[in-house]
Structure formats: C-alpha cells, structure tokens
Length: 151
Image (cartoon, rainbow, N blue to C red; front, side, top):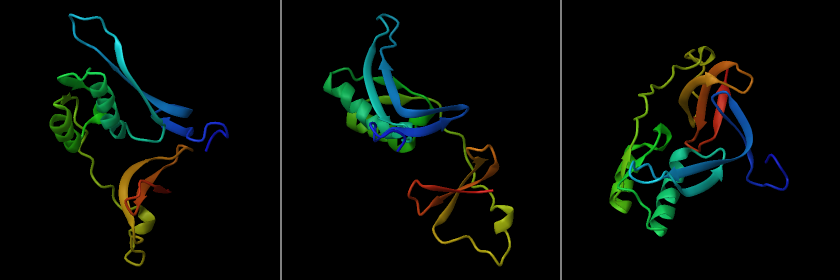
C-alpha cells in the first residue's frame, strides 16, 4: 500500500518510469473517416498486467455498442488466449506485435552447484535488474505472480 486514502495505489516501474498510483487504459476510434475520439477509459491497479485489463475493456466497449472489428493494441495485450477469446467472445480481431520468444534464464551462479538444488516452487522467470539497478535473476514463487530476486 502506498497511500492510506488510496488502498489500491501501488508503486510501479516500467522501464525508466516509476510512479505511485494506477494504470489507465484508453481506447479511441482510429478510423480515418471519423474523428479520433476516446471511446473507453479503464483504470487498474498499477501492478496488474495490460492483458488482464483487456476483457474489461472489451466488455465496456460492448456495453456501449462501440466494439471495433479490429482492436489495435501493443505487445502487452497480446497472447494466444486473448486472440482467441477476443474473437470468440466479442468478434474482435486483436492486431499487434507478438511478444519476443523469451527463454528461461540459466540458474544463478550461486545455484549451479549440484549441492544446491533449485528450491521447491521457484520457477525461473527472467534475467533483469531490481529497484536498485542490480543485475540478477527473478524467480516466480509457485506460479503465484510473486517474484523473488537473486543477485
């Protein structure tokens, strides 16, 4: 919790930007023959992923009869599951760049010894940097969405 009067406000970081608060997802009409108008505004806790907001966005657009036939989105909204769900549930074609093919990171050097097995429940996630800009490895704990950082 970052603020007593805003219980869902969280500290977040995306690339070089940090903030305390929420995420906002904006949808707009991008048809060349129409004015570019914002048609949907959805807010979410800042630590949620973009893809988690997509069903709420589509439902909000459907409730207003504003669903597009094609929804142009960035990489954060694209997954195989969302491509299928958007088409089957809302008859919307998601269009956007696919994610890079991420590979599991190697075990950190201090865990490569045969005497030190990978702790139960830790799944390698990514090589990266923590909030102090230290390079290390992120491991997800039991698929919970909670991560542990090892330097």
